[in-house]
Length: 130
Image 1 (cartoon, rainbow, N blue to C red):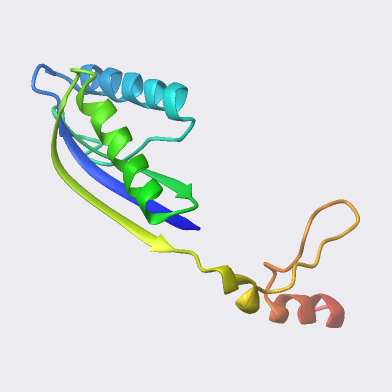
Image 2: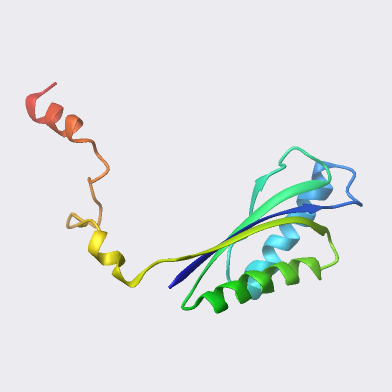
């Protein structure tokens, strides 16, 4: 399976405030979620009036499908007429079939929680009362 990640910059020329830019970003985020069922996240340019950096990811069976999915989302954003895409970086990576050979065991409690995140040192302190 392939993981595709895309980060792109948009310019909202008609925006004269953060509120106007955020309105455009919100519309894009909602429309992309509705159309493609993926999350579009603002990852940069938070405090600028006319620029935003957005990102999303996809998971597909083939590299061609991955590239097509990334291109479809970018094309959809551009054709909304709300902004102009000025820079794009996208990558596709193989998440190989033998990924399980390096997977770590998952230890889950009866209630569905796990304490694997707790450092061993902390667990030792609890046992010794430290």
